[in-house]
Image (tube, rainbow, N blue to C red; front, side, top):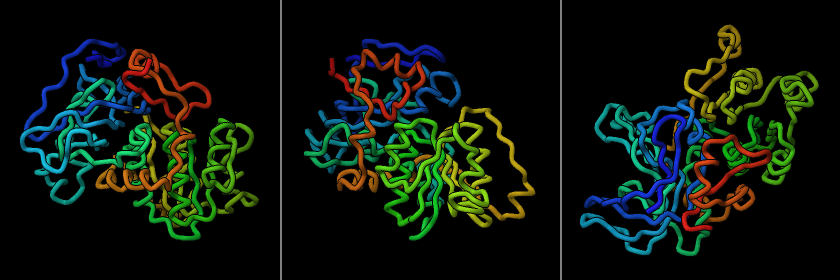
Length: 342
């Protein structure tokens, strides 16, 4: 089969590889679509820990082509999505139900071969059946939506809440939709790109802000801002120093900041502990998708989440390496790698 291989930091290439041999509790999945994530670019640049050589790709869906002898509840021909994050089930974090913090966590597409290939081996405990008539491109959004669901769960948004989302990529735009479904009545998205601001408004943002045209802090939380004094909840979804620092200043006293964006490992940001203390801010990291992948799949299958307009383009495996090795094109939200597409 064909597979995109991260052979070393800064080296990603298309190779011929053996089709995976599956174990007794695994499914052989023919990949229909796999999303390119910012984390894949961090892997390429050495900004996120991984174990090359490896086939990246952790946002995938596909068709079951074979099942191991111990597998139950799945059949050849099922359309499935996979939770890439494999917890050990034995460590203290797993026993406490914090599987995303597992001491022995291994992830498909990071520590073992993932979805930028024609086939992958998927443990049955990580697999979820999708409706047979679901657009296969939509199944590739279950993992990023699951991560956003975890952040929204941590935020405890209540009907009538005010929410700020920093970053207009796929995570920010999914978070806007989830905040709307959770009952937030003021949803503000800040991003540089006009096309993404337009999408955010269509998806439920009540107002958008161009950070190149106005001071974000004044425009949103200033005395004459959109939410004077700050918002109930701020989601940092861009993963850059500037927005991480802005997030602390955009929450109201007693408010909540959720860090969802993946920053490069080693990046530093400045904040004032005095400010956090005297405004009693709650600042939480939101890591991965603990127990949210099934909910994400059900939400996508229900049609409650707009997916089609998040797909910027679909590329074959032959173009995947170039997409991973380069920054997103202007206005691009999500690129899907579709094996077999020419």
